[in-house]
Amino acid sequence: MAITLTNGSNIFTGPHIEVFRLRTQLSALKLECHGIKMRRGVSVYTSVKKRYGFKGNREAVYLLFKNHVEHRCNEIMTQHPV
Image 1 (spheres, rainbow, N blue to C red):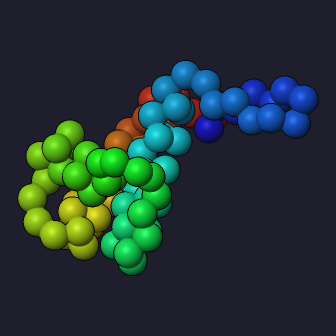
Image 2: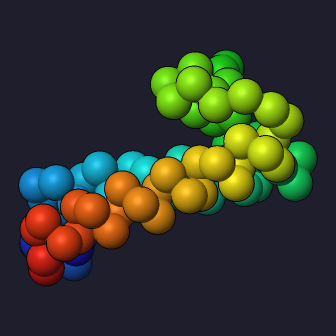
Image 3: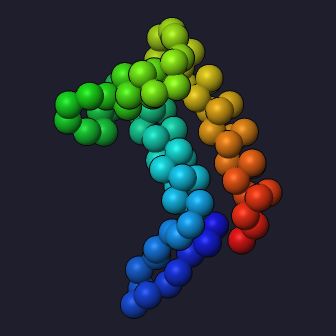
């Protein structure tokens, strides 16, 4: 990923922001499958279902989203290598 280091902080730049966001959502969804909520309000499960049109329970949506994330991240990383 394109990372800019400034004073000990990491900054993701360009299209790699989407990769970071997708992987973060995938991790949060995995935790929700185990019963841990990552935020108040709308769950990641609900937002992922709504945004990508997936159907099913948490585990089914997790597997569908995991496949989507892997495909999308590979696509981005081949177009924009580090």
